[in-house]
Amino acid sequence: MRARPWRGTIIFAGAAVAVAAVTVVRYTAPSSDTPTSSAAVEGTHTVVGDAERVTYGTVQVSVTFTGDTITDVTTLQAPHAHARSIAINARATPLLAREAVTAGSARIDTVSGATYTSEGYRRSLQSALDQVD
Amino acid sequence: MGVPMSIDVRDAPGAGDAHDAVAAAFAVLHAADERFSRFRPDSEISRIGRGELEPAAASSDVRDVLAVAERARLSSGDAFRVVDPAGRLDTDGVVKGWAAQRAADLLLSAGVRSFCLNAGGDVVTAGEPEPGRPWQVAVRDPFDPRGHLAILSLRDGAVATSGTYERGAHVWDGRTGSRALDLVASTVVAPSLTDADVLATSVLVLGADGPQWAVEQGADLVITVDHAGAVRTAGGNAPRPG
Image (cartoon, rainbow over all chains, first blue to last red; front, side, top):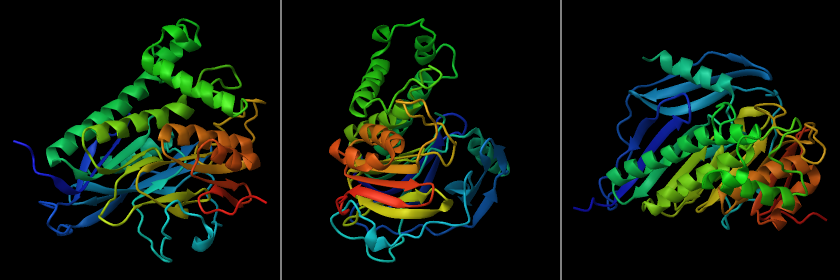
């Protein structure tokens, strides 16, 4: 029997080498007719991984859990980070979509950045996960 | 490669289908990671590097990747090369985007209509995360791991970022062998991640001439940052360079 169409959010996270894939379920929508609603938020806690020295600086990540599942991985420190950050006027930044992003719209689904393939990143991430086991 | 990856699925034929499709997508990425590893002495890439295997006799995956790399080398005027200054074969700059695009194609062919795949900072999106709004892809600030340069809105497309701010000088200029580049980061938006990935790396090497060149190669949008923090763009709604 064909499974009914499914709509909701499932985030699968993993790494090509070190970290086992984990499934994170944020919301469940039983059918496309039902408005997406967030599941009751269980306790969230954030575990900070070790600060790992790499050739070009220090790498450190934190992992946020909601219940047992990973809901976020944040880079706290990365090589070449400067105190000064670039201020970008959102209206001056060209966007791909025809419609303009409304000023102040902070919703972000994902981040594109230079590859976090350093061994230090993996070790810091693993150290955060090891604290939970 | 060893990249962290996430796949965010919003609309699929069924929840079970989503799980199966994502497992297959991860398997594609794992397989590519092993096949193209420079650190496994028995990988095809290592064997080609030692002269033990002729590229023409390699697997179709390896031949595909090398063909992509050769097209990129020709169109970039040798700026993009998979042979490093020491003469070693290093396909990392093309494999990540190539493999992630194949993983995304697998999701589409499995009927997953809406997803956002992020493989080590390279992104492929399809559909809408929620009806009526596009995916919002932030571009990381090279100087602040928690800051963003811009937020890009897209439905079906790919975003690749190349930069020296995480791993230092791992990108080289194929024309000169130099690892000293004017740019610290480049981001390219294009219909395919395979193209966006090689274009982003090429732009990083080409410097000031990169963005306009990449648009001529088919990029939808290019964003670059130099050591002083100056941001330049091409494509999208950007003003044309004067």
